[in-house]
Image (cartoon, rainbow, N blue to C red; front, side, top):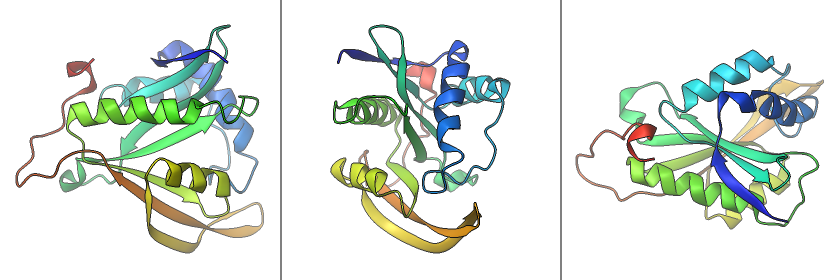
Length: 182
């Protein structure tokens, strides 16, 4: 399958909404209970692109196969060199075609250029395919929280995973805005 990795635009909000929305009713993928509306995704794409990549995998026929985007790990300034990422493949995207790996490689390449040091993933602990993907990408588990969320009548735990992408320095410079490295 041929596809390309590109930066999202606000025009991609419907596709992102639909991809994520497929997983919302499932208790083993996300703790989101209601899928936000398309306008919320449009705003999310625009706000994310101020600071972090919001990448799409797009097939030659135009179909969006998945996305990866960043967000702050925590709101405090001392965490500014860390990024929490989200990666979601369309439910009908072909598996084992390197789509998730391609999204990750471009995502981490851009973040490293910006000056970020770590990428974090927060995964529902029963989502074994996602945990295995993260391990294959070099992430390591740094925490496991039992019963962190309640959805669809059950308590679920989360696994925190991380990967260092940048060099550690005594006094790092602030990460660059996304526009400065594109």
